[in-house]
Amino acid sequence: MNQDILDPSQLLENKIGGAVQYACTYWVRHLRLSPTSEDFAEQIIDLATNMLQNAPPWIEVMSLKNQLGEVIHSMNSLLDWPDRVSNSYLLLNLFTDYTAKGYSPSH
Image 1 (tube, rainbow, N blue to C red):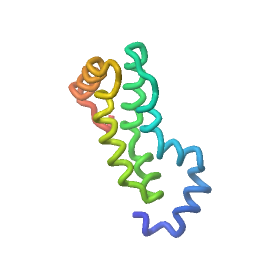
Image 2 (tube, rainbow, N blue to C red):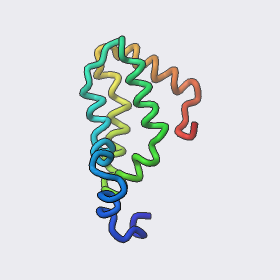
Image 3 (tube, rainbow, N blue to C red):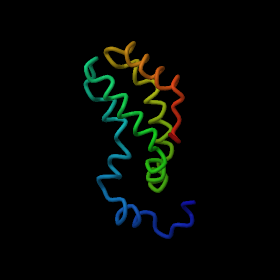
């Protein structure tokens, strides 16, 4: 638990670094703002899926930053993201295919 860490800000600065902290905080926002077309839809879904499969380090960094609420917001944002994309039908089908194949973060 975070209360066992003497100085979370020092740990973040010395071991995690600013670039990783930035990426953990803003990757979903950047993903949502990226121009998306049918040509890139599958690669973007692969990126989002890979990030979710590797979520524990992301969640740990956000926890150390006292931003777990942002993780929840980001997850919700990812879930409604296909509706905002120009070809949401294709993306929705890709999301459905991933979940139908038994996606789980432990894979």
